[in-house]
Image 1 (cartoon, rainbow, N blue to C red):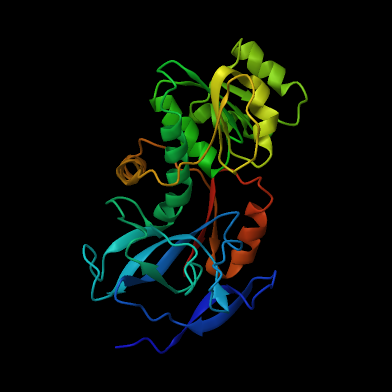
Image 2 (tube, rainbow, N blue to C red; image 1 turned 30 degrees about the vertical axis):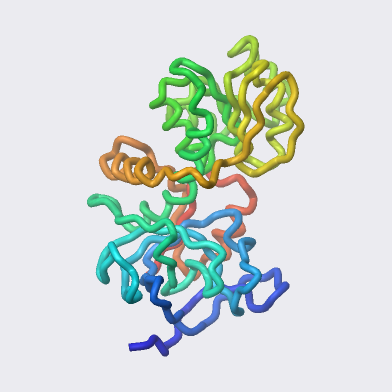
Length: 312
């Protein structure tokens, strides 16, 4: 039976619009290679209202990641069944994103079962930040046990995972954030916290690790150039936000290797969170109707950990 009823969604109303509005739109019809998911919780990210496909159908529901229950599957979908709890990433799809009652998701997207013991809210906070942190660390695989990493922007969702994952690899970690977040980063396993407002922060990192760190993970935009002086000669720098830089002193400059598959590691990360072995930083859970306040908060780039929207 085709879906003919409407649903609530936060949308870009028309091409070129710079506003997000709450309205009602038709529930998307799925193709043979798609699933229809009844969304229960949505992760909030800085790019949620920016990632728009050229063939988007307007009004266009925004959002990239969510957790929910499979309502219906297309005839060519295998490995998924209606009623299954799933967490997924779905971006740049012409039918829209995740900030809605329902989302049409390509079966080829990142879709994973939610482990036992993990709720929808927790699950929705993991896939984008977890995927990004895992891929960034995979690119830094040549950092040895006992090696050093500086994370520029360590208190957000990606940094929260990166600090803990790097610590599990036996690395020594320094990270930057506002002073109010220093105790938080240290509690996650960072060995050194610096305040990026302090003009002496690079000097402090180099006093902590004379000669420079083995690698830098530059999470926040513009932090790659600022962080380059703390990398040792011949070290590595990975820009999460895609800063364009010219290499110097033999430093290896990288972006996120998006083609790398870290699904198994992401599933393991979710299981560790469910078991209480990894900390999931949830700064605030917003009711779905307050989504615009959550979007405004995350766009300040000052959120600690992750923000999530919850369906009623």
